[in-house]
Length: 210
Ligand code: PRT
Ligand code: ZN
Image 1 (cartoon, rainbow, N blue to C red):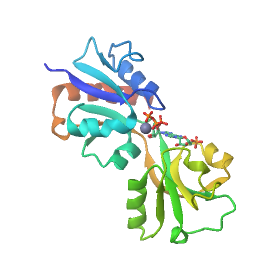
Image 2 (image 1 turned 90 degrees about the vertical axis):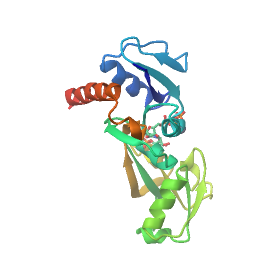
Image 3 (image 1 turned 45 degrees about the horizontal axis):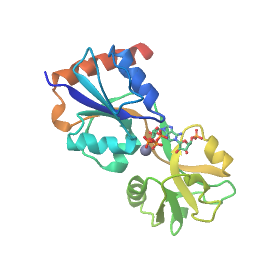
Image 4 (image 1 turned 60 degrees about the vertical axis):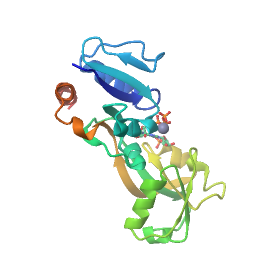
């Protein structure tokens, strides 16, 4: 049987838990820090280690068959992939936030304002759905400092504990979407026997954690 390829994050917030999940499924592999691809010795699977932003596109184009990535990253990429299983880690919320002394109360108050974000696609869709006209400033990191620098009136970024917002003098204003890590596949792979076996093992690991 031909091996499937699964793409996971090389380093960052999802790496450790993605590796642990696969190990808890009984998969044996090593050397993952030093190589970008590794073969599982006891299962028909190869593991690719990538930046999370590249994972949806690799799976959509078929370079990888499966991937583990945050829902926020999939939505932002607009890649056409199949959602197989939510994984219960990497939980966070994409939120709008404003300066803690801001008087803005309602989404409508964002009309005519500027919002800094690394998620222009998700934010653009959210604003359209809510009929808000605002300027989106796309920046790739350190979004939380934008209002303090006078670059924007608000931000839209990932929040988990809220500590980063607080330490930058910001307060949450509205939730845009919740996210967690999810197993994705190429759409035509749904009935693949290797995927079905892997999914059964993942689901029993998740059940044991409940
Ligand atoms: O290098 P690569 O591109 O692969 O990684 P990355 O730096 O783009 O992503 P990484 O590793 O930071 O996050 C990977 C995924 O983890 C994200 O896409 C989310 O799905 C998920 N996740 C969960 C988070 C957080 N929690 C999180 N807190 N991603 C980012 N953050 C950041 C956020 O951007 C903000 O700067 O943490 C800060 C806020 O945290 P709190 O706890 O202060 O609220
Ligand atoms: Zn990234």
